[in-house]
Amino acid sequence: MSADHLVHLPDELPVRAEHHLWSISLVDSAKLLAQDYGLAAMDAIHLAVAIAAQADVFISGERLGKPLFRVREIATQSLWETNA
Image 1: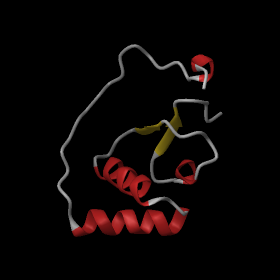
Image 2: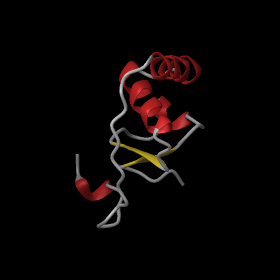
Image 3: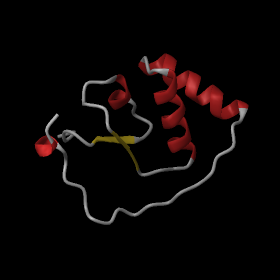
C-alpha cells in the first residue's frame, strides 16, 4: 500500500477522549447497527461508542465501500479516500 492515496488530515485535529463503560444499552446499540448495516462486531461496537460520545466524525482505516460507511447516525471518513 502506498501512502500516496492517504487523505491529508490537518496537523491538529480537535480531539476529545472519553471513557465509556460497557453497558447493556451500548451493546444493544451495537447490535442494532450491526443488524441494520451488516457491520462486523468490532465495527458496530466502535461506532456505537462514537455515537454515544456524540463524536462529530468516525475516522477509519477501512477503505470506502465497507458497510461502516453506510451508517447514517454519524459522519464517517476513510483515511484512504475521500467520501466525496
